[in-house]
Length: 198
Length: 198
DNA sequence: CTGGTCATGTAACCCGTTACATGATTTC
DNA sequence: GAAATCATGTAACGGGTTACATGACCAG
Image (tube, rainbow over all chains, first blue to last red; front, top):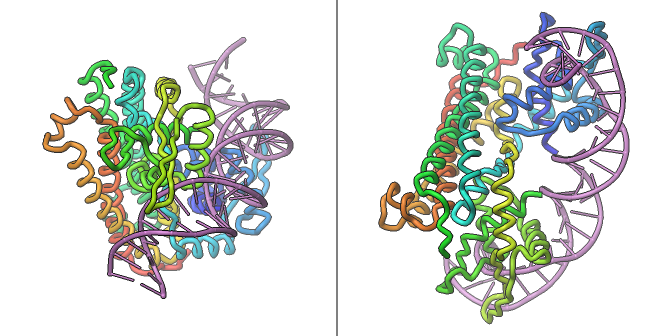
C-alpha cells in the first residue's frame, strides 16, 4: 500500500489553478499529474486515484471540500492534512522498496534474436519520438518552475524544489530513452531481416 | 497478462550452466535473472515465476524436463517451444503498453520540501552506491557477452544481441540513477535541515 | 554451527486493471 | 457535427504480494 504516499506527495504541489493559494487539487487534476510528471515515478489509473482519495479522506490524511461550479461539473478539492504530513514523514524515514519497472519494449528487444524485427524497429522509433516530445515538455516545465533564476540558484533558494528534482530525473530518463531507442533501431536495421538459422 | 512474455524472453537465453547447449533454465535460475538483468525491465517474485512456468507448460509454450541431481535438490529445466516462439512473435508485433515505473525514493524526493530530509539523504547516497555496484556488474556482463569483439563489431555480427542491448540500457539507467542520487543528496545537504516555515 | 545457496511450491488476501456509467461544455 | 475536456465514480475479475512450508548441502 504505497499508492497513498504517491498521492499525498503529488497533492502537496496543490496547483489549484486560480489564485487561491494552496487550495488543493481535484481527482481529475491529480489524474492528469499522474499522466505527465508523476508518471516518471508512479503509475496509476484515474479510478484508483478516486478510490484512494476516498480512503485517505476517511482516514483523515486529506481533507476535501466541495466546489460548486456552474459552467462545469462540480468538483472536490483535496489538500493534505497534518496527519497526512505525518504519514509522509514516517514513510520518508522508513526504508524504500527497490524501484520497479515494467517495459514491454525491452521484453521485445530481449527476444529480438528470435522474432521478426520489423514491427519492433517501428515501435522503437515511435518511442524515441515520444520521448523527444516529453524531453521538450519537461524542459519547459523546469524553466517554468525555476522562473528567472538559474538552476543552481533555484536549487539553493527556491521554496519548492521536490517536484523540480523529480522532473530533472524524468528529463534525464526520457533523453536516455530516446537515445537507446534510436540506437537499438539502428542496430536492428543494419542487421536486416531475421536470419532464421538455429 | 504480460509476465508470460517476460518469462519467455528471459528463457531464450537458456544458460543451462554446463555444456549442454541450450538445455533450458530452472525456475530458480530464472528467479535470479529477474533479480539482476531482467530487473531492468521487469519485476517479479519467485512464486510468480514458478506459477507462470506451470501455466506456460500446461499451455505448451514451454517444455520442462526433470533433472535428477544427487548432491542438490532435483530441478526442472524449461525451454521455449515452437508455440512459445509464436506467442512471442505475436506479442512483439502487437502494440506495446507504455512502460511503467514505481519508485519510493522519487516519491520521497517529491515531498522533500515538507519532510525531514536527513533519512532521505542517507537513502539517496545508499542508492547511489548500489547503482555504482550494478554499473560495474553490467560492465562485466557486457564484456563477457561480446567476448573479444568490440561493441560495434559484436552488434553487427554477434549471434545473440538481445540481452546485450537490454543490458546496455540497464547500464545507462544505473549510471543515471547514481548521478541523480548524488546530485539530489548534495542539493538537500546544502539546504540544511528543514526550515519549517509555511 | 550459523548463514547462504540450491530448489520448489501452496494459500489467503489485497491491490490494480478492465469494463461500465453519465453528461454538460468548449473547441475544431 | 465530432471529438476533446471537465468531472466522478461502481463492480467484477484477475494478477501480484505476503506469509507459510520444507530440506539438504556447503563455506566460514
